Image (cartoon, rainbow, N blue to C red; front, side):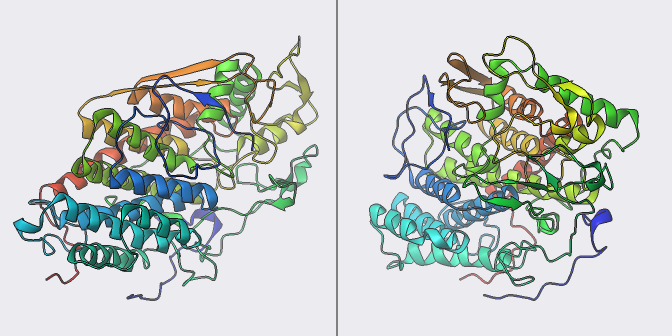
Length: 518
């Protein structure tokens, strides 16, 4: 099955071969995160506040990647890929210095002699691999990556055998990934990550600031772009983000549709009307706590690490909680980021295939001209009633709804895949983080919501996965089915990705390991 579905060509174009904001203010019971000198311009998110402890090179480079993400404009599937590629480079470099592990490209053929398998050589190989990947994936951030190399005591050009091994391992990964279908380098269509499949929306844009003109929604079951003001106050119309990302070569998945999920509700069915009514009613009765949950887990928009980055932050918390060493962190981040990456491919394949409508369009279409309840504004004594044609999800005005189709929920799949790996890697569902969100720190209702401090706690990864998913319903940007099926699919992807990673940890080289070692 092609992810193109009804909205584009039936086959993937051949690729040329390559060789070569007011942020949420938070405090926590578990302390402040240790980061680089320049803090990212974003709200603290899940996992940002681990217990104090020394950060190893894996955590330092993970933090650098997340800070680069806050300063660039990659979409969620691109962020998932970038994190996975970087941690795969780091893993492959480390594997050369482990007595058992196999790398993804060279297998065991880069294995260094026992005398070279020192902590110092591991750190050096990992850092050069991470640097090589980072400047390739976030090229505008190179000065900051150069600065981190200097802080770690390394010149940007490798001066020793371990550095050369790190570069070599990473360059093999990058050669493969430059031809993986993501169009990172603009080979298939000019512009990094630009679509090469010819996707075109069937509906005209929705003018968010006006009552809906129902004539713009030619097909009420299909995605509709939004015309709105961005965070700089500039008018813009959304373009579908990454309609080709279901074509990307995965880590462990056999295909984007390996794990089957039902089709979303069709327009004209009772289920279609019911899902719109349910979201309308959910957002109309939001409590302060539910509003906080909606905003806290969003991690989208300018200055945020993106939903895939959320789970890298959570892995960072786990590392410092458990006082992991480099060996554990290389493996944990490698498995987790690749699980999230695979989930992004599956989600974006289904999103493109179904091209499904978002709640804002469906609700405005069904209820335009009718009086309906909207989410309660702080300080109002009575429920707010509006024309359904002007309904608005509980989102900031510059980020009303993401620029891609609704079904299934990427948030839910990312969380389920990442959380599942963390459960399997640690051997426990125990998580144990918490955060207090300060009164008045909302981006949607700044200065007014929440009315008082709200503390969120996640005793288990399962509770974090569940809250992450339902936050999209509270925010009014996903229907319940999108959350439930995204979660169920993400869990399966997490299990599969972790089992694939475990084989590599045990020294079983992948059949695709096709590079020549020495």
